Length: 479
Image (cartoon, rainbow, N blue to C red):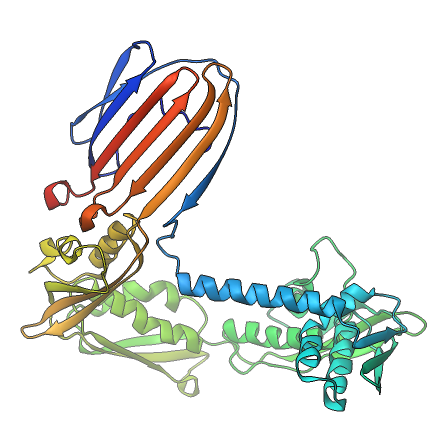
């Protein structure tokens, strides 16, 4: 809002109607314009054309400023964790309990930052042989993560100080990776998975990666998972075999692969109270059936079909899918899907809990027009989004609860956001001179959920004020 001109506005709130009063003094009359929103309600706007060189700054102290999807408790926990890590880092840099000897590849600050958790433990609980051994272990691990595969760290305790003697050794780089046994998958794709854990810590522009044995082992596991995801259910990938090039610091590796057979979906049968024919149901999962067979995709079949049924009112639908690769013929795995559609449910009334200032009727009236209509999760999602866009809530949970007669009562839990907001503007314009402004907004006036905004601005040429009151739901309707 810093430097924003309030002289020319056409206030049209999205899907809302607005009434406002505007007072002005010290300004010459200007040409007026009119604009109309979708509801046909007329608003007043003043159009002025100025050539202005404006330098301004502003600040906003917000009593709400809560995102519709934010969770204050989680944010506070994250901030507390960040503060704790920051304090640990400062303590590690100041600590005199550790003395590094023999380091050349990294400076003291880098090493202390890498060991901040262990140093914090020593500062809190004191130095002991077990904690000294932990520090040496993690320091050695730090070096190996950067390619110093032969690094070795010895520790000793002298009084209240931990001495760490470091033998860094050479830094090894990763050379060629040879894949043995791959037939169906290209080497380039397998290589990306194999070096993925190391690549995450380095720029994509860096061509020479350090050799990290633990990363390469993790990469081999990723290669195996990739094969399973491509339908090679029996694929096995052996641990990497490193080969140190004589007279160099380059390490090559060999990864041996046993692919096995690739499986696909075979015949799919539907049993139970399906309501819809097999062709219709198959059409909802056809894209999954065209992909290789995996347990994860078999688990996706019921979720996809449940969503299809629930969109048509079958709230209590149950779907199970069963496939057994042992019964496959030529790699085609038959799948049996059992469906219990149940009854069609309709919306009933709604209840709301958790409110403090906002009147419950503000929420329940948004769902009143659903009573008696067929259940649909998409409808509830749209209602949820509409309420969250008001900015009145930090958290909103809508839980359908089955009642007698195949009805669904909507139990709503709401956590309100702080509704008041105070802002200031300070600036300067070559035409109007000094600018001072203040704005106050209450999104929940008297608990009715109707926003009220008041603002005042004083410049070298005069002053102005504005009061804006909005009704997001005109006379509690959907308009």
